[in-house]
Length: 250
Ligand code: CAA
Image 1 (cartoon, rainbow, N blue to C red):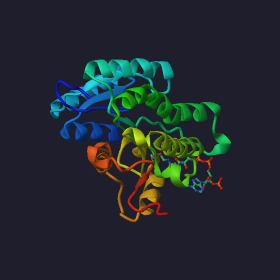
Image 2: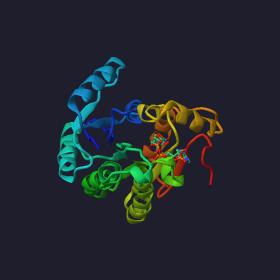
Image 3: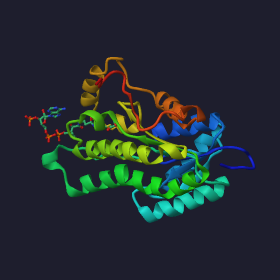
């Protein structure tokens, strides 16, 4: 909390991606001080210029979420810039390196596990003490429909994304009586660069299997994140929210 401005502080990892951008905008609109994490300076500066042009003045913090020590520096920089400890952590950073298992290399497995799952440990580990001291926190972990149901070509990604919810459930139990909530959201196929990288013919088949009949919009994910980040969501913890247009119901 930045006590001078009386504003809560939110750290969003992987901020410059499609979903991350929408989350940054929505939480800023909702009155948070938003710290946007990035890894690649050039890309981040370009992104920040477009955010500024849209009227969003964010704080940027560099760090590789796959690297525990890098995250330590990232969190220190974020807290210093924002003027207080992190109240809301959105573990949003993620990558795909798809391939059928018989062709999957160790590098494809390792890099996806590090970026998509180890990152959740790395970032949460470095913010949790601040949350425990202040007696307040919101941790929102961005998983995927493909962590809930599996996907041809994604043994690495599905393993990481399924692992995230195991983490959520256990940490939610450890922190429930400390004012800290921990939740997972599991987006389906959202109109972002990541999904647009799926070959066109395969993407069309996927869309045909979504009962709502279209890809999701990043803003639809950001709206759910904003609810979970709010003071109003204090009784919601350990949950996994499917937001997939009916593609996977269970
Ligand atoms: N189900 C069943 N069989 C399938 C299949 C599927 N979905 N896709 C391919 N196959 C079959 C092919 O018909 C072919 O069969 P034969 O050998 O009998 O001819 C065989 O598998 C091809 O296997 P390959 O190992 O050669 O696969 P490939 O190199 O052609 O492509 C792939 C595999 C790269 C995984 C490709 O299928 C693909 O890109 N799939 C999409 C994966 C996907 O949905 N990724 C999501 C990215 S977005 C994201 O992850 C965000 C989120 O959270 C939702």
